[in-house]
Amino acid sequence: MEILRLHPLAQTEIAETRPQFIDRLLRGQFKTSLHERLGGELARRIASGGYPAALARRADARRRAWYRDYVDTQIQRDVRDLSRLRSLDTLPKLIGLVAAYTARLINVADLAAPFELTRQTIHDHITLLERVFLLDRLPSWHSNHMSRLVKRPKLHIGDTGVACALLGLDAARLDADRSVFGPMLETFVLQELKRQASGRQDPLAFHHFRDRDDYEVDIVLEEGGARLAGVEVKAAASVSEADLRGLRRLRAAAGKHFVAGVVLYDGEATIAFGDGLFAVPVRALWE
Image (cartoon, rainbow, N blue to C red):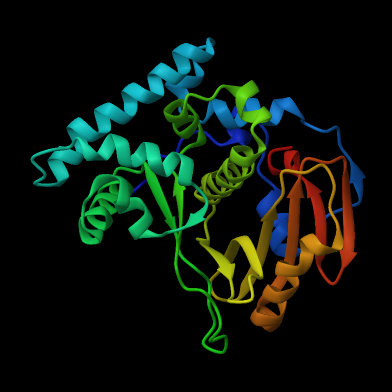
């Protein structure tokens, strides 16, 4: 028996390009180069998501309507088949809350508060939404030698097109609201990497990294326990040394297994910072 997960389309599939970013990351090889900033185009890609049926609808309002109908169908059909829940009224509200909560550490108490439900009930609901691929739990990376690591997982929406539709955001409104844009970009990058990784012969494990001193890395990729790389996501158009602090801490924790760390940002230049650390324009994910 073989299980094949069909992800939404990756940006490499939409652009009809060959995915190379993960290979470059795991080799720690990025050449100094210049790229044009995406600007508002990045917000458009995030808001459009990756479901083919939605992308076939050129009008933004029709695309968002498809995503909302898709979520309703998943809850009314697949979730009902998987569970014994008599009332599914909480689930659409919960996934709407997670859409605004994406890329944060899971806090079940915060998620349970608006519904007056127990933490266990909310936990069970999250598990159900994961099983139909509407939500994605990202576990923490930790080493047995690093007792100060925060071990709570992060919660991500399964597709940013779904999230923007549930929040009523088109590309212009997403681009204007930077408090939402940053977490949504992080989720967008994670899902793009997972979609590209699904076509690799050697599986990759995905994690996040955070310790109790608030050093963090948004995405950690691990190949067979032998090679490890970190990806930090920034919504800004520039990168400073301070943006590398989490990657440096991850490198120290991973030791010889660490191969490279990258800050993805909406800038113009690929820049080497030394010791396997780079700043890379986010469009390098699919170009």
